[in-house]
Amino acid sequence: MRPPPSTDAPPGERWLVTGGTGFIGRRLVEALSAQDVTVLTRHAVCAALPSRVRLVESLDELGADASFDVVVHLAGAPIAAGVWTRARRERILASRPRIAQQLLGLLERAPPPPRVWINASAVGWYGLRGDECLDETAPHRDCFSHAVCAATEAAAVPASEFGVRVAQLRIGLVLARQGGLLARLLPPFQLGLGGPLGSGRQWMSWIERHDLVRLIFHVAADGSLAGAVNATAPHPVDNQAFTRALAQALDRPAFLRVPRAPVTWLLGDLARELLFGGQRVVPTRAVASGFTFRHPRLPEALTQALG
Image (cartoon, rainbow, N blue to C red; front, side, top):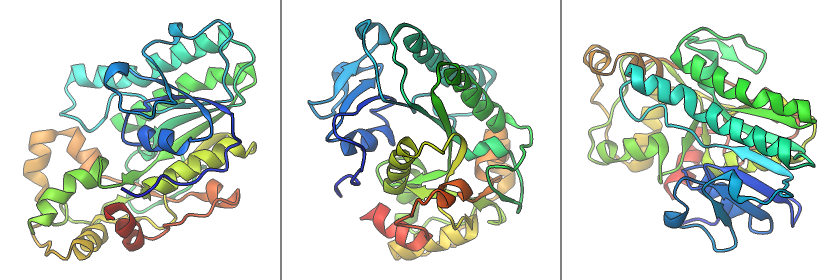
């Protein structure tokens, strides 16, 4: 495994991370080697994190005088873990706001407040937009993905009433072989059974995982970044180009196109929005603030992610 990305975060800063045992959060916590890190997790006993990290299953375990410099809220029910039944939709919609309410309760009882709350949203906020190029000023179109992201973002906004800078990271597809989309694609592609989804024309806005962690550090440090911040690489690709790049990275063929109709019949809106829909998102605010992507283009990002 490659070492975690370096961070310029000041040593000794106090960070509170929800979802710190997940695909993104674990890598973030590993990179916070010189900081005071607390992770809120449902399964503290099973969490294999560095011994220096404090694990809590409830914010009530923190003392009345507990305070933090940075809060990163990543925890929530995964949106792509199964068909969107009514019950699953309700769980997904409620999960991140419920934890956000607990964090707001911590702010009420534990002054001084953090200087920044970094909230994990997603590019699904924009809805299904075809070929439109979307920066942070773009409006949305209604769909379930937007509803989830809107609820996630709205739940964090009250933190600003405590003087906290709230940054909403609209995260794209995160690339690393240990999880996320890439981990699900690797088995069929390695067997030569990969291929485009439907027409292959739907856009995929992505970011290599180390670059995402570096962007979190950048947002924490840059006091000008509040509100929406697109957390995607500057060169999104369509599904056909993504398929071609992944096949080349694995030195495998990828000719088996996945038909849209039967997959949509099986998975419903999940397929329509996440597999055959998409967003062409660009990180205008991150780039304007001086952030530099180490892996701005897909082929080199896949080399890093698969290494």
